[in-house]
Image (cartoon, rainbow, N blue to C red; front, side, top):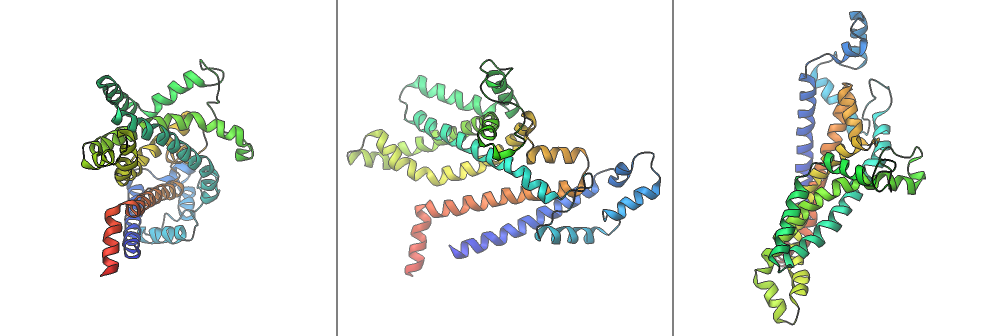
Length: 325
């Protein structure tokens, strides 16, 4: 396990450095002059040159890249060229909305996807199987924007048919008002969790269906278990490594849906911050936010690999044999 973690960490660092270089180069070759835009169309050239020196854009590309990476590794993400505020502090404030929203959406996806997928795999009725198949396809193909709009039409206070939950904004005091903060995240979490849950349902049904046709479930039934008990205790356990990998991969879809939901529900999270900074050509903020997003995806992949290694009996057996040798 130690050697496995060391290899994964080395690959993590190399991948993150390669992504950082790609982000830096892509943002530098985009058309337009950030300093000229900030100075104004009618501003004299001296003002644009002064802003360019203040932002370090007059230095060579290798020097700019090394300065940015060294500061990033120290936890200094730079300052916004528009607001002159610390990017790290703004990310910390907005992460208090985005990460709870991701966790809440993941809980919704797992609570919907795994039980419904198991029920679909265990269903004997052809109509029930067809209905679950259609529900998984429809749920997975609906964009996050449409699901969010539908939830607003149904459950939003003031405009929905059943006015239960707020559909816009976040409490000014944040999590100091936990009830209002949680209520503000329910509809966005549902809009992303239902879509991701449909994909998890489809994979769960497929994985458990393969286990039902194998000899493991039949062996459990021969030992006195019912078909449902054997499927859940044996089949689902054996399918859990693949299911963990699927959940990790679908998290990428959830991140995209969260960005859409934050703008749709007017939540001041990291997704809305990134979109705003891209529109304002805030170069230091955009490159740091993209690198943080890439680090999150890579960390998620590393976590999935570690969990897969821990719960897969084939890896545990190989590790015991290596230790015995």
